[in-house]
Image 1 (spheres, rainbow, N blue to C red):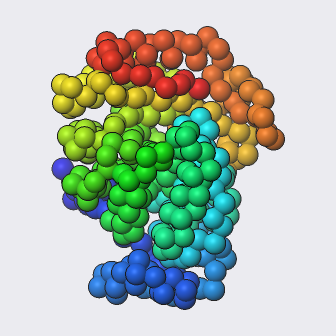
Image 2 (tube, protein in one colour):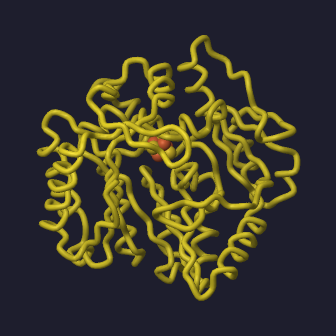
Length: 353
Ligand code: SF4
């Protein structure tokens, strides 16, 4: 291993440490804000005060790519004001907002377009307000179960070592007869979640993929082996477990890549993991706007975004997306579904989209 390689490995294994932190003054009225401030001081991380977590602009850097990298290493600690939750179909009824932004550098990530000019990371300290709002949404729908997705605008496991917010959410949901929580992650920092009360009300899903995809398109996330080891721990702690295979990418050797993926999952998980295991399958898609943004931020990406090779799928709201032509999409769906059932006969495939 070269020294450079060893440093890179080390960086990947460490949990996220921002280069600069902004605090909204009001965030320091909350225990979570105070705790993060104490950590920032102990770690000797530079910090500044800001009037609003929505107004951090002008990141240094000559190119958009440089500015983007710096923004993604900037953390903002704020108070969540909007307590109206967005909907989050098809996997849940609502998105529960505990954080926005992510330290990962997945080339295909949809946050690049949805977060626009604000790719920096925000964590919210007023958990009581957020939980109270969730309670309201649950009560409104009784006797229906209400599901909340905590990873719509962030990767909350990546931020858990700093915020501890998932721990609070999971404990809250454990006591909710009609409430359920779910989130998806590409990180492995789950140790603090293993011995807390969850009552099976939280489903934790790990985002996994063929080696080629992880290697070329998912920098600054946890290595595959660590994600799988974390999944095994989560299964051992009795949580409902799931995997999201996304984005499914057509590449040379894709059959081998996805067959190996399912093989490694089967080897790493406990024998009884098949019952109550879910899979969600999402083929790669992009919009024209996303393609432009990605090409600026990751100019050397190998991500194939040739609209000539894709099928245009009209969007319900606004611009449509480019997906694989039906024949390719069907081949991917069939092949991966077969591999799933070969190894996990009782698993459920929730959807392919
Ligand atoms: S880990 Fe998830 S949220 Fe973070 S950059 Fe990658 S795809 Fe986006």
